[in-house]
Amino acid sequence: MKGLTDRIAIVTGAAQGIGRAVAERLYEEGMCVVVADVDGEAAEAIAAGIGPEDRVLGLECDVSEKLDVRNLLAATLNAFGDVHVLVNNAGIVGGGDFLELTEDDFDRVLRVNLKGAFLLSQAVARHMVERVKEGDKPGTIVNMSSINAVFALPSQVPYSLSKAGISQLTRVCALSLAPHGIRVNAVGPGSIDTAMLASVNRDPAAKRMVLSRTPMGRIGEPSEIASIVAFLASDEASYMTGQTVYADGGRMPLNYVMPSS
Ligand code: NAI
Image 1 (cartoon, protein in one colour):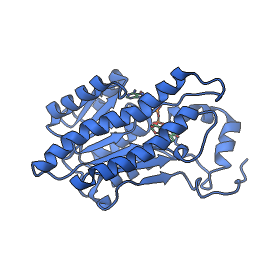
Image 2: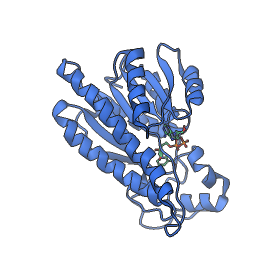
Image 3: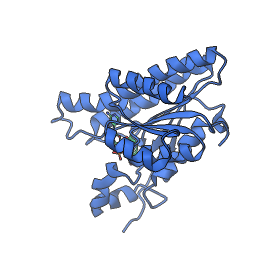
């Protein structure tokens, strides 16, 4: 896609699932990619499987730790000299019944899913703004939201809150960075076939429930989210900022229940 070749991307939570598919897709688009994950060994192994060390680097980073975020940016600049695309994908689920939820449950999910995206966006945007002042082309940020930014899940209170926060982070960052030409958008997936969905895939009743709300009648593939990330990061989306694009097999417009067996 236009404007990606030879540029440099950081993808967080990229050792598996959607993040891994995004890293693979951006590499195929000709980018250098940092595969960042709290599981550093897995990040290194996945990076080595995607491409050579001078194009793909696996780095350990807990996005909720400011020092890790600073080190990730420094290591990226050290290896590749710049960063043009940030994909804030790292995320965890966690929760339980609202009445039983602990403060720790709440903090853990919000720290990774929302604070992590804020810390990285701020650190990378500061670098991007300096590069724009030096005459470089503005970079872009893509956040991983969810249909749960809009749909409330009572069993996933902190998760739902974190994703609603991601949509608003996307909008406030878009407005803050628009004067510098830096675009910020998000993707909001429905149910995608990753480890995060394993409990649904294992349980036929849970899977039927998901499909009863999915007009396209199937779970999505990580590559179907990666292609939207690539589009939003590319110059093909040059007039889009502050948007969340939902890819959910038609779930959000649905106002009835699909027959499912
Ligand atoms: P996953 O569980 O397969 O992968 C998440 C990755 O993030 C893992 O490699 C994990 O090690 C990493 N990670 C966890 N905590 C981290 C931290 N503190 N710092 C850095 N990395 C960390 O999940 P999946 O499904 O690939 O999800 C990716 C993103 O997509 C998440 O933000 C999730 O909320 C979102 N999403 C997923 C959906 C799905 O159906 N799978 C639906 C909607 C949104």
